[in-house]
Image (cartoon, rainbow, N blue to C red):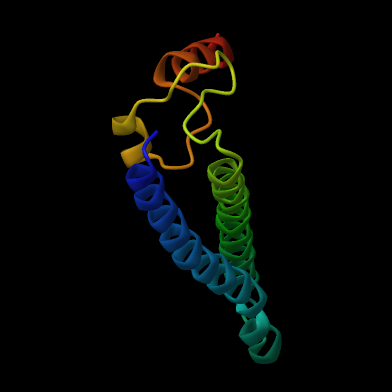
Length: 121
């Protein structure tokens, strides 16, 4: 991959990392905040269930965001190591179009499709 393309993907990944880090932080804070008011106000039991659901949902979103952050960091390391854009399964190049959509993609479209088909049945 050309240096110009790598620089473009590095910038895109770094931008994604900054915005996603902020969202993960916000979700974790939201999860901590849910339920604090209910403890103080003596809210109905059904509302406590809703609070718990919202807290779990916020934590789930934060966890998925953290996993994506890990993938972004791996992609940035691959740029530094000179192996960015190479499919981890077959060793072929991942198309630039796929990387434009998912700059932290670890698999080419064909291998990703195989993986999803295998997981689905």
